Length: 180
Image (tube, rainbow, N blue to C red; front, side):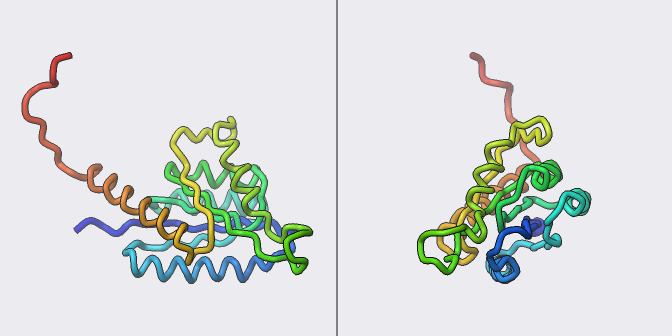
């Protein structure tokens, strides 16, 4: 039986945003822990990132974890200086944004988290020289317990299991390559 998948999770938070980031992180971690038990993967938690020094430190922690996937959560909007070290820390990355929570003013006013904007920005600079991400980056959106998030995560985990199985499999080729 192959080793379970190892999924790393790190939250990116800018303190200037007024949303309840600690609640958002806690809810996400608790939901991921439940999914890890149900979907049989190991969850590796990396402390949240809120400044460049912490991003560099977290990237070094990630590099030694032997992860199958790094899941970076935009808990709030965050700029490229925080994301570049994390994106470069692992070849297989998913970027996740949480939906906006009401700011107390109905459907208008400032965005307390602005995470979706951060996700969009992150996906737009994957070919930037400071990032150099030749492999695809999977995006996720929604609360951890939403069907949309869970479906994308389950699909990703299935693909990773297949990839991991073929990387460690003995493959037999009978005969030569077919002619043109």
